[in-house]
Image: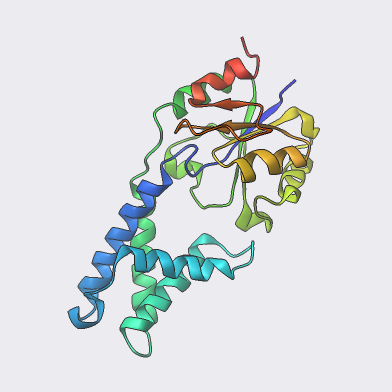
Length: 226
């Protein structure tokens, strides 16, 4: 019996890559507007992405995505304006976050799938990111576990063990659904969960992946909902 179905968010429920690029392009424009052309004219979206990745590489699991983004903009501003400008870094971070959350791109199969699952299962989220379900217009979830709040990150199976304890259900009654084989399938199964790989792109199925869907509307049949 499946009591809970948990979902990853980025690239599972929403097109995070598109949302992030839009937000970075907007933040870049804001930086270029506020800084002299001689210092900001050569900046690119890839520069902003690289700065973020550098900060994230050394951040702890409990460091929020918002904190990582602020630190990355501080680093970018410091390169463009000697001595830095904390006010500018704060302003561009807020600009980025507004753009990031104001224009969600939810995959078309998501709402129908969640609507169909809700009468039969409790639904939740387990995510390393900060795409909060309510910002996506999705109110189907009884529990939301973000790594930055728990202090554990996928693919650590301890995160899944923590979730099982918090919802008070045996691991075998929990299912994880996500686009990452390592983070969402193997790590969940190591913690005793069931897991479903979401393979929207039709990639080759790796060895030992036993449950997969290309469309979330097929989950009910896979779970035996009838």
